[in-house]
Image (tube, rainbow, N blue to C red; front, side, top):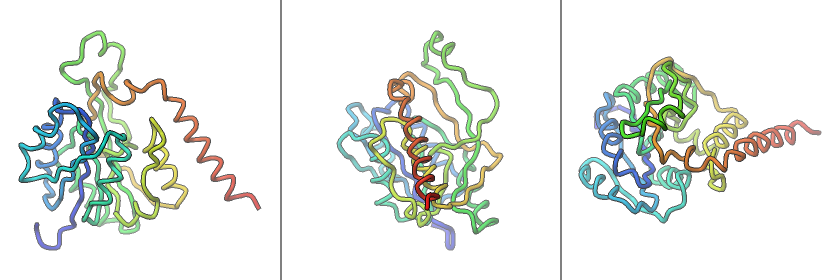
Length: 232
């Protein structure tokens, strides 16, 4: 590790992503900021994800848990993390090589900030059938990335908010982010592209679309908490 460089703990939840995991890990290893630890948390995979991760055994720490969901895997990673900062990358997505560096620069320029986000861009995975590509639109422009894969957060700020609530089937990050805003955490959104988000047939949002009502319940729960704080 370079002296006086902040350590970033990168947490990668893995569930049956042997097809994409190599690209994800390589995008971390290409980062222009090098003091980081990679914590890959296998969430009960039944494919060859462990073997793929084994190709990088000199660079990553690999842990396994029974299948409980990405939120639980991220929580496990945060408890193992030794870094001053936390960052998250899903095993099917890809970081831009200057992602960590740009976000650390933002923290250095604005020490009062707790969270730094960046822009993301969706892309169709090459193996996706054409008929599915037609149904799932990927906008050509950048999207403001309120997403775990675009986020870097000070570890002490994450601990102030607490762990991801794992009882949600979808939307545990939205729930966590709303709680962070309620707790008064300060965030900034960079104009830079930091994450390429892969669209494929086993995306959680596609696979678990029947649970989209969770989003409404999450927002309602946040509104109820806010009302409770303002009532005499």
